[in-house]
Amino acid sequence: MIKVLILEDDPMVAEFNKRYLEELEGFALVAIAHTPDAAIEILQKKEVDLLLLDNFMPGKTGLELLRNIRTAQARLDVIFITAASDAPTIRTALSYGAFDYLIKPFEFDRFKQALLRYKDKWTLLSNQQVFNQKELDQQILHQQHKTTEVENLPKGLTKATLKVVMDAIQMKKSDSFSTEEIAEITQISRVSIRKYLKFLKSIGVLGERMTYGTIGRPIYQYVYKEMNVDVLSKYY
Image: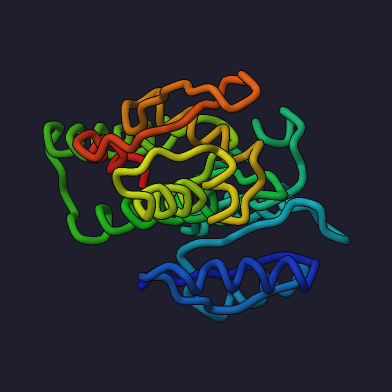
C-alpha cells in the first residue's frame, strides 16, 4: 500500500484531493497537512511514500519544502498539485525530482493518470531489488508506451465523457443518429458532443452520412461501426 501525505493550505481543495485518492486502489492517506511545518512534523513521525504538494502556501513554498527534503536526503516522492504554471517553477520542481506536475484546475482523469503511473513505478521498484539492462529497458519502454496511449486522446476530451458518449451511441444500436440525439441522451452540450463524434469518426468507430430535411438543409447522421470498436480500448 502506497502511503500518501497531502499538503494543501485550502481545506476544500485538500478534501477534493482526498476524495480523488480514495477512488484509486493501492493508496492509503496518512494525513492532510495545511502548512509546510505541519507536513515536516508528520514526515518526521510517520512513514510516507508520496507527497501531493501545493506550491503557494503561507510561510514557505512547496519548492522550498522540497529543496529542504532533498537536502536532508529524505526518501520521498512528490507530485505537485498547484496553480503555479510558470516555466521557472515547473522547471525547478522537475529538477528537484518531482514525479509529475498537475496544474489547477485539473480533471480527475489527469489525477488518476499521475497516480497510476506512480503506482506502476512504486510496484516495480518495491518488488524487485536488482535489474539487468534488458529488464529495466522493458519496464521503462512499457511505461512510456502506456503514457503515450493516454495522451493520444485529443486535447479537451476525457475518458469519462467518452465512455458516456459511447454508452449513448450503443443504446442506438444499428440506428443512425444525430448530434442532437446524443446530446439529449447524455445531457451534454451539442458543442461538446460534436467534438466526441468527430473524434470517433476519425478513428473509424463512426461513419457519417448526409441526408436532406424537408427544407433542403443537409443533416449529418452518424452510424455506429461496431466491428471497429476495439480501437477504443487504448483510450480507456
